[in-house]
Amino acid sequence: MASTTNGQEDQNQAGRHQEVGHKSLLQSDALYQYILETSVYPREPESMKELRELTAKHPWNIMTTSADEGQFLNMLLKLINAKKTMEIGVYTGYSLLATALALPEDGTILAMDINRENYELGLPVIEKAGVAHKIEFKEGPALPVLDDMVADKKNHGSYDFIFVDADKDNYINYHKRLIDLVKVGGVIGYDNTLWNGSVVAPPDAPMRKYVRYYRDFVLELNKALAADPRIEICMLPVGDGITLCRRIS
Ligand SMILES: C[S@@+](CC[C@H](N)C(=O)[O-])C[C@H]1O[C@@H](n2cnc3c(N)ncnc32)[C@H](O)[C@@H]1O
Image 1: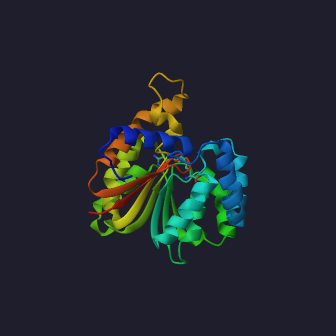
Image 2: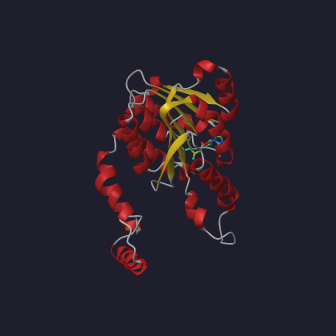
Image 3: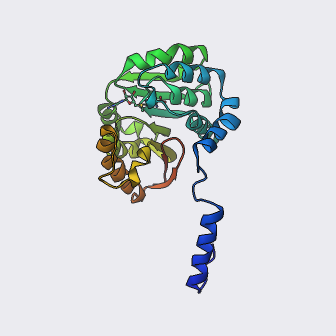
């Protein structure tokens, strides 16, 4: 909005905007449901639907990437022509499948998770979709693998896209390493950067224990990303919040 010299007029304008619109479009659960039912579910590949429904029966299903975020990732990867990618935090593989479907036949995903069992739950669906050959799964904590990769200069600047959706208390540690591994012009996506909306909750607000535990790490990450001159950032209110970081130097 163009600035005016009249502060009162600015305030009136702001008031009017608050009445007719909102900076976030998602004013209700019904609106979110509308997005899912109008744009996401009708275009969701059959394999992703199958994996989503299979995952819904799993006791830890709260961890899965939402269908709208899966659609977003799939589109993003195609827009940036990603070929070499990495994912930290696989669970049953919904975001992994969204990625694998978006990549060209010779595209690759280095996928890491401490839990192989959950990955193997979704694997038959990924195999049936014909994209399992793009995935190299590594079981175990991601950080030591990243350390090994960073130690070898040939890995530097080699990734087009990296999706981070695992232990939030390590996100800053991941970022320190991933910034070397992603290429200039490539993108790192950090998931859950709005962390259940808790990023704006007063410190004494009632919160689930795990939400409270990770909240400070998410707040610290958001500040660090905003202050990092090596990247451009864009925080999107998709899913639980995803911050895209495009490496510029
Ligand atoms: C939110 S879930 C990932 C969801 C997944 N992206 C999806 O689309 O369903 C987080 C995953 O991170 C894994 N994880 C936790 N700590 C980890 C670590 N240190 N290294 C790698 N994976 C880890 C957990 O086992 C869990 O499967």
